Length: 553
View (cartoon, rainbow, N blue to C red):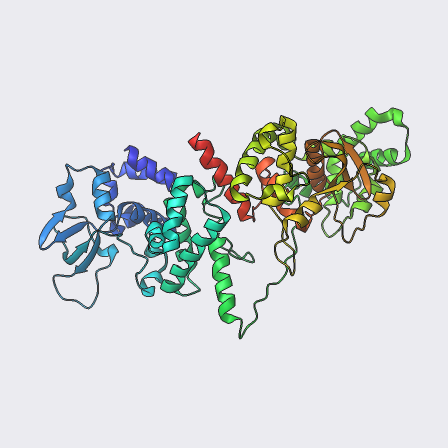
């Protein structure tokens, strides 16, 4: 019963394993299950519908096939393996005509696996059994009829798609240009068959078949694996993905003459909503006076003696929970200036890292643990995705193979704004590579006056925090600083500056700068592995690339 258990676990129905075993099902009888039999075994309708969806997709819907009057019942396939019989049925397109004329066509659920029932067929062709060219009436029946698109066949019919398939099979990689071609061809097929507003079920099936045709595109950390192509919407959360974006664009072109396409700007959620401290924070009411933290905070504000550094560190550690609750107090918008006014000791070295460690103990050292290997993947990936990536760097004249380990790690940091750019909240859309890089790291010459530089920062045009490099080259900077609230904090290396700059966002509960938001979302989800929804398709594509190459290695 390995096949039966394997499929039930794969379809996420572990509770049904014992039920099927009690009913005497095995690997031979499991594929023969019909909807009538399933009603007795799975009484709950919702679970049964989801189960039958996977069962039909895996084992097909017909139980007996007649070729020119000769009946081949499933009972005659005893000597044939289950996989072989399933392959035969899944590859057959059968046009069925009832032996007794009737205005009602036989539905898949009315077919029985018993050998006494048979269906006469006028014609049989060995193409995909569930063709995407079926009528819109069939698609409108919802999840009761599982669509199946032959993505490779659709692409092969287009001259550009034919070249695309050969290129993808050879390189096992999907570039931005190739993904655009892929999505355009498949969306054109959807619009032809179902109009420019196909149901979510149709779009999900198309996205699922894309990663079935090209498994290396599957996001290993995604729920479905195909979120890069389509992710179903929910209440107040619109659908997203490359297929949905293309269909929205086609609808906008179609409606532009009558109804202008407008999107309402959405307020970015504040960081830390999924913080591991959130549940504990809810249990503490800030209106209740807590004498001990209040006394410690007042002592740290009043006492400026540097000899008490160990005591300051101790008090900052004990008040970290209170500070986190105060910053995220419901209904309050704490600015960085307000936070530093109440907790000025956060400006001392190591205090931001200590607060982050208390909030996220498992993620404290993630960057240092992973960046050496991650930098190599980024450098390999960007050469395939953006061949002209060196033109976006301050130093173009270098040979990647000649760089030291530290220089390669620094180089990988500079690739982030090129790979994961941000988007403007309102008009303008995606920002350019240069805008993203300038918002991420600022390069200044060695003789720049730091005090005057900090005074000249315009908070309206220069979002903080960010990294500042004074002197040296991009690959070997002379001085590295983290800038926030017009304060400069010198760091020992560029990797250290990246770590502190990221943790500052979470400790102060800051939103990412929109121009380089993609970079920080990448650091958050891929490097630090903090829980949260990934909205960027470029991040999902990079995770799929890493997963496919790790498995091939």
